[in-house]
Length: 151
Image (tube, rainbow, N blue to C red; front, side):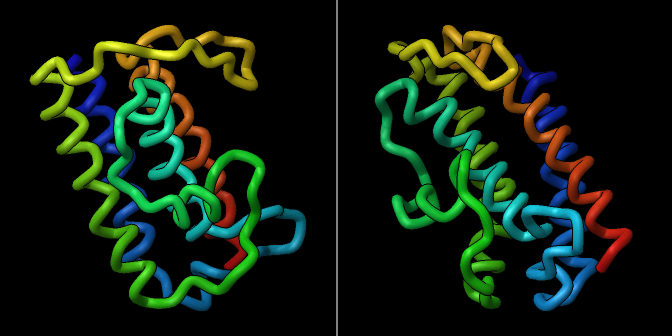
């Protein structure tokens, strides 16, 4: 399981570097041909990881309901992210993974509600949720890499 967290930390560090490399205006820009922006993708990966592991296990998430509503699956950017929200995302990128790993070690994830993903894979445990999560984050890192070319 530690390699799962190592892979996730690698994608989160890439996301963090992207956040640090662009202005707020650039991070909020939705290029022509895209449905979202870099900052939405960052918020989305944080929210989805929390929902896949904690929410589907019936545990409290480390993020606000407001953040979930802004960045969950099926949403799109509907506001301009300000510096304070960006700072929160930057912090949450690594804090959420550190806490999740601590909770895995403590065997906090006992119950789990099966979840059929849009890819057709059915997630049946928190371990599977974290494995699927790094696949999901890889997709969104790729989208962010594409968006960078147009901002």
